Image (cartoon, one colour):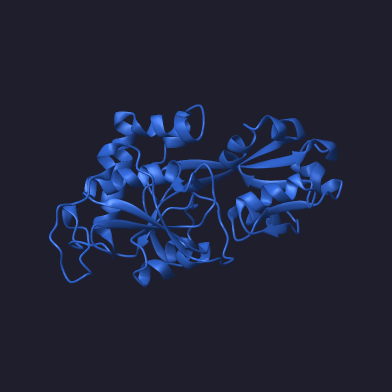
Amino acid sequence: MNTLLGRRTRVLAAITATAGLMLVSACTSSDDGGSGSKTAAGGVELVKGGQLTTCTHLPYPPFQSEIDGKVQGFDVSLIDLVAKDLGVKQEILDQPFENFKTGGSLNSGQCDLAAAGMTITEERKKNVDFSDPYFDATQAVLVDKKAGVGSLADVKSKNVKLGAQAQTTGEDYAKKQGFDPVSFESSDAVLNGLRTGQVKAVIIDYPVVQGWLKDQANADAFEVVDNLNTGEQYGFTVKKGNTELLAAINKAIADAKADGTYKKLYEQWIGPYDASTAKGESAASPSAS
């Protein structure tokens, strides 16, 4: 998911799911500019006192996007749970996907973790440490109904122009199938390219399509003709060797699945709950390349 193309970096406060998530650790000021201790509950060291700094790339609904001036979504809500356990608040830093996919933002101390609907791959694990999987994802082939195609095979045989988001597993999949897809900066740009006729079909993460097709005008004009089970699983990332924060993230994921919070958030942000999406066992589970 996401793109390496840059745009102006900005810091946005993440919306908290409940009033309890607004709690900030009652630490005394230190030499970090008066923002509190950089050591949170459980001995987790933070890059900035009093907050859990999350790198992401916007927009990527329903996982993270700016709604009414606040960054909200499924990923945001899950990381809010981590922040609550640590006794701090979550702050979100929007930047190019490449910055944190390669571990650069984590290694330079810009953020504590990255949450961006990121697929776990062996290549990416060379640069960052992934949490346990928190979401099983598939790719969808979404087409203009007027294009007259009923599958990805039709897209190829009829030479229909295909789009995908740059630097994503969806784009990688398209290229491996012999396509030369038109690359777009973000998931929103992919869908806008389809809407405006720049392309007649796209490969994009199915959860994104689910949300987009809730708009009746979109559902009237576009349809999913293929669901590609690429074996992808999403994970959150931390700097390699940051075992304390990784343990805190994994605990929050496990607790949310056990107490029903995960199901509640899934239904809030994505749609009808399918237990198979929460079956991830470990960060070593098979994933798409």
